[in-house]
Image 1 (cartoon, rainbow over the protein chains, first blue to last red):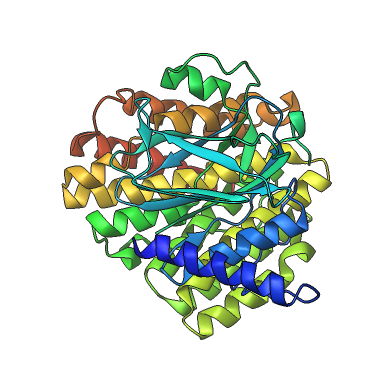
Image 2: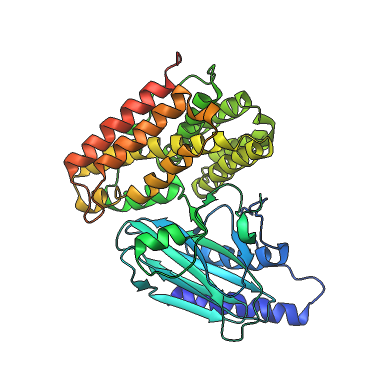
Length: 158
Length: 263
């Protein structure tokens, strides 16, 4: 619940900031920003790092690097290895920013997971505490509007 | 490095797997259908270990290893192992050990011809170690490793990047398995359920160019991954402490052998 509040506060504030100061948005960047995250447009990375910075305050550590690509029909799928006992957040942003996307996490046995999820215009996130160690699958897809063209995904752990 | 289908990776944490239709729902099929696979950082593994086994991280230090080898593949594996050593030192919250390991990483990166790319990282590692900023150090170590890999990719030396990853992971497993064995906790042994990950790392080595794949460093690494996989063959349940001991024996033997100078 605390993390969901973080989502609401960070993105609520960042949207307000953009509305009031369109010329100079200054997101609170995390301590370290990956210098080379290919496949993600700088604007999308920036939105992700705002979130990573906020989750960092909750003790989550962002992986160095994000993953991006086109969203054309079928979901994009990534295999990730998670460790039992760790908490994870998988966060994705969409482009254009006004579009929507979905993010789904599947466990090693094929079960859909995500004790905490967050959907907002231009953003989707799913959080989980891994119960077993193994290979999990993250799927990113267009949301109901079908307008999302690209995504950029980052995951964090603690 | 743009990956197929415009899926791209951020630095060098991940690699492309098979690009197949997304039809079946079984986990095994999903693994094959995944467009990308991410290799976790040792920090993730160690964070989970810390919760269950509460290891005495400093007890896992090893004697200083050489920082120059005649073979580039051997250098790459040892660079990976040194990166894992860096994470161990961070877990132990030992600033001096972090700095020592950072120097080794830079020296090994130099031997691979990419030292200039990470010199500033070495300075940052030293600065963060002086400030006891352990969280920043974990990020810096991952970034350093990724920059080495990216620089090697830019030099069309991607093959060695796979060996760095394998070296880092085998050293991490050496420590993780010993820690699990010592704790005797089922939750700690559960963390050694890494068959899918090791299969991926082994497959990456199988894809190396023949010139690299047939070096003794690469074949030893591949054989070690195969032996570890054999020990972890059941994904249905967590390895028992006896299996953790066997994993440790295999990984420790490999790390000792690969870090010995004559190869």
